[in-house]
Amino acid sequence: MPHPEFVGLVNSLQATAEAALGDLNAATASAARDGLLAETRARQTAERSLKLLAMLAEKTRGNLDMTEAELLSNAVTSLRGRLEH
Image 1 (cartoon, rainbow, N blue to C red):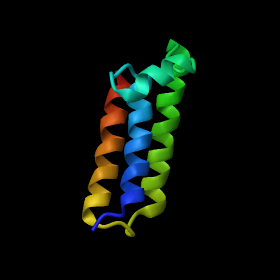
Image 2 (cartoon, one colour):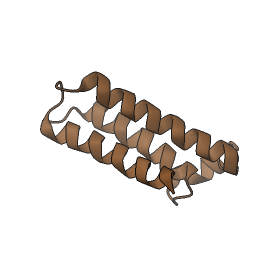
Image 3 (cartoon, rainbow, N blue to C red):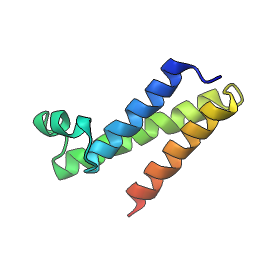
Image 4 (tube, rainbow, N blue to C red):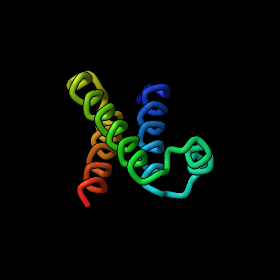
């Protein structure tokens, strides 16, 4: 069974990156207000979130249940794909 705080952490980091990349969600309004959506800063924010997720994946490898591992892997893969464009 996935740990709720772990799921929340992964979802939060992914949402931060997606908001910085322009996805519309509840975080976008506060990110814009905080100046995180300026083009250069937005990319840096998204890249920082991706780096944190990738580090989390590396450090927890072999210690997650299948649901947690898949959630984390999907978040990293999705963000990497978006940042490569």
